[in-house]
Image (cartoon, rainbow, N blue to C red):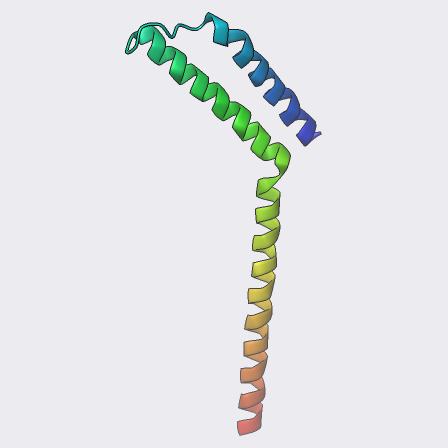
Length: 92
């Protein structure tokens, strides 16, 4: 369901972008209309990119990799503590 929602919102943002591009003004360089048009297009592209990022699951891969690294660190810490415990028992 989460992926479907992102696809729908990305499609809506892309549709809104394609619908509005012919209506935006790009004639006068430096005018308020051109600045608004450029900012509006950039914002719409950011929305599309954010939804595409979620659909591709880039964060999911990163989360899995961080989880794997944390498990390895915990295992290394346990091994270190067990080694110290054995060393203390050996000294007694």
